[in-house]
Structure formats: C-alpha cells, structure tokens
Image (tube, rainbow, N blue to C red; front, side):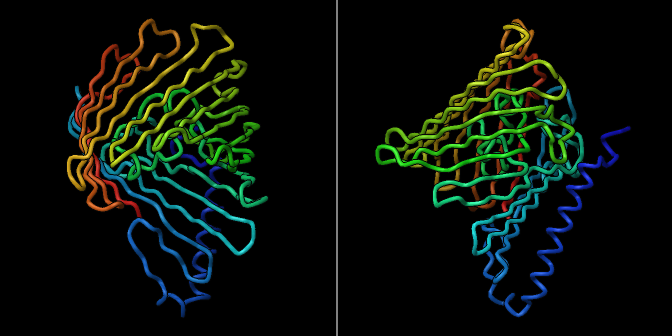
Amino acid sequence: MNSKYEMLPQRRHALAACIALSCLALASMHANAASLSDIDYRLGDGLHIPRTGLTLGGYATAGYDKLRGAPASVGMDNLSLSVWWEGQGRWKLFAEFDSKNTLGAPSNDIDDGRRYVALERMYADYALSDTTSIRIGKFLTPIGRWNLIHATPLVWTTSRPLSTSGVFPTNATGLMVNGRLPTMGHDLEYSVYASNGRELAPNPALDTFNEALGAHLNMPLLSGMQLGVSYATFEQKKSAGEYKQLVGVDILWTRNRYEISIEGVYRFSGKGSAWDERGAFIQAVVPLSASLYAVGRYESFHTALQPLASQQWVVGLNYRITPAIVLKAEWIGAKNNSTGTPEGFKSSASVLF
C-alpha cells in the first residue's frame, strides 16, 4: 500500500473529526448569524465566533530556497487550520491540521518534501483546578521549547534545529497532566505525559512512539531567564525493542528585545553507546530596528553510528511587518554533514491568522 496517497483508517478518523468540528463551527455560526456583526477580527488573534466559544485560526508559510546542488524552488510549505472551543465549564477542545509542502517544489527540512495533511494536535482539556489540567488526545511532545512553539510565524528562522526533531517524535497520543506550582514567589510549570503507542492519525514522516513516559519542568531563574528540564523513556515503532532514555535542558534569556536560547538533548540507547544520539544549539537574536532582527545559530548534532558530529550554522534576518506577518531570510552552512542538512539560502513569508 502506498502510504503517501492512500488514506489509513486512523487518518479517516481524523478527517471525520475535522469534518465534525467544521460542521460544529458552521452550525454555531448559522445559529448565531445575528451576532456576526459583533465580530471584531484582528490578524493574528484568530476568528472568535460570538456566543459559541469557538475560535478559528491557523497560519500559512510560503518559501523560496536556493540550496547547494539544487535548483531554486518556490512552494507553500505549511497551511495550518486550528479550531479551539472553550465553554463556560471545565472542558476545552482543540484541533490543528497542517497541510505540508502544499504547493510548488517541496522544501521542508523534516519530512523529505512529502505532501500530506498532518493531524498536528487533537485533544480535550479538563481543568481539575485553576492550576492543574488533564489533557487526553494528540499533543506536541513537551521536550524543549522549540517543539512547543514551532509554528512558523512564531519562530525566528525558516530552518529548524536538528536536535528539536531528529531525536524524538514531535507528537504523542496519550494522557498528560500539566499545570503550575507556586515556588519561591514564581510558578513552576510542569507536564507529565504517557503514551501507549496508539497514535492518532500517525504522521508518515515520523517514527512515532510505541510507548512513552516523560516529563518537562520550566522554572524562572534570574530576571528575564527561564530554565527547562526534560526527561523521557520510550520505544519507537521502527525500532521496536530498542528502549531509549532522553534528558534535555533548555534555557531562554530575554531583555530589551535581545534574546539568547539554548537547547540540548542526549538520547541513550538500550543497544549501547554507539547508538546514542545527542545535539545542542545556541541561538542569538539582536534587534536592528523596530521591526528588523539579526539571527544567528550554531548547532552540533551527533547521530547514531557516526564517528563525527555534524555542525551547522545559520545567519539571517527576521523582519516582522506586524506581529502576525513575518519575513525571513538566512544562509545555512554545515561541516561533517552526515545528516544531509540542506545548505544554502532559505527564505519564507509567514502569516498568522
């Protein structure tokens, strides 16, 4: 069976859920047609449907690349739709669908340019209290920071660091408890999650979890600085029987529109140290004007069975026309490029709806 084109049962279920959510949105809009004049939409804030609890949003990204050894390419890399419902009670519902490499020549770093519709997230939240919630469904794996805010208009570069996607599955289906605890005058944010491997609409580009258990903590330190710690133990579908453990650290410092972010992960393999993988990056952002920023990133990434770590550096510009419209351009270089990281020029235009 060609998984690139045929629809798996799980994907049919996801499509059915998407249709159901869309019908719910349309029905609510029809039932409240008289209230549509109350809509006050601003780009980037999502479309709030009055008296329904529904919010529609998403983002789109188009890119132009001129990579080493390849012809120039233009394409729409992402077209995302999200539906959010929040009523008066304790329940909240959220779903996000993302059409990858939609138009033109594919240029995505993670999925080898395959065109498909991915179910990024679909979950229900139940608030046990003001500080603790239970989440069930499909969610972004809480490892590091980049993976949780990876929507293209919200990150500084067109390219994504290898250590934020190549070491662990970026999505998980299961149960999560998250919240915050007051400690020393600051809130300690936590997430604890588990998955039994029954992935909801699995992404064909990912080696998904077979089972997983993990946690992420985030705590404020000095003024403008936050520290995160991640841990996970898991097994993946394509390497069943190889149990892995991951530890990670992430740091974010911001002041006066300057920013430094650091993420590092080390994944231990039950097959021995030769199968371990590890990576880390440091990224700096410097404001050049009210809307223009210079961005630089260095990353080292060591894959299993490779004698040397791949090194990658990115130098670029990020121009925020508005908080919802972002233009990016960057140059990517590499050394010991055993991962096949694209090298050369990448650029993108992103809009947050």
